[in-house]
Image (tube, rainbow, N blue to C red; front, side):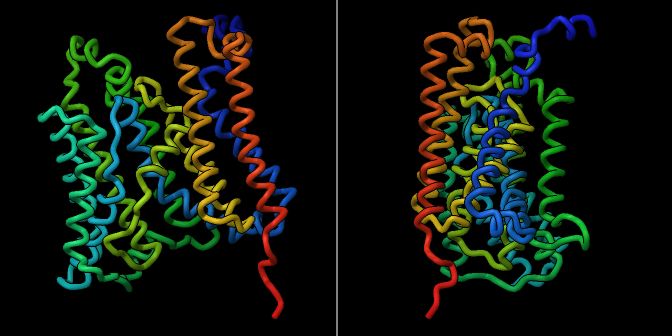
Length: 372
């Protein structure tokens, strides 16, 4: 084993870690740029705390979405699941006098039930994942709107706010601990259990997985149940973070989470997953959005920058997977081909656009403390 490792070239040793290298390089680029543009504001302890708190909210969902996407699925209903779970939890606490210690588990179980419904619709009725979860997104959001009736439910017990924004004195925030714990659990599930191996097998070739005795449909349902539970957990964390919840909360959870997972190297075509990459993707998007806010760039340009990162990442990983199928000698060998050079130029151009957006914000941002 040691001899085989010693005989591998540097490129062969690095190739399994490309999924984590990509977002880490982009994180480093953001750090270097902000060190030049806004070091005093961006690297304050309070701002770093904000980045971690924002990333922690998406970590549980990114963990579960990694399994869903790896098996060639998608879930567009997670924002509505988070909102509906939070609304029902809030009603249980505020109007029916439930203990927060009872209401929180009920909310998470409710999310798992909604994930079960998604999975059954997809597997039993053969509805495509995209259409099925998009339709259920409308259903769950509709239920949330009917229940809330335009109300904003606020002021919850301290235990709930601690879940959303609390901090152990002298240590990292509690939501960050929860988020990292879920990512570690997901890493163990993906790399050390049959659940993870079956997920990759199904994503690689569902028909072959079925022939080997794997119950593909049942396994898909399990993944959606996990996704629903994690979305509900995110809804609980969001409620605690804001100390409030309403029916229109979490409108863009699905796009943000899918973007983080894809940026982290999990293939939309299935069969390729990286839990560490998903973790890095969540951090990357939170750092990028925070950097744009720090530079006082308008929200609309933040959306443009997010889209640039997503497009470049999907294009790169799609190209990498094609090279794997074509047997082009791996990614590093493929980079030396004409197609590889085109991909490098394309990625460099998109990253250049992102850097240009950051530079525009740094040059033309107004004074945050105007006189008068």
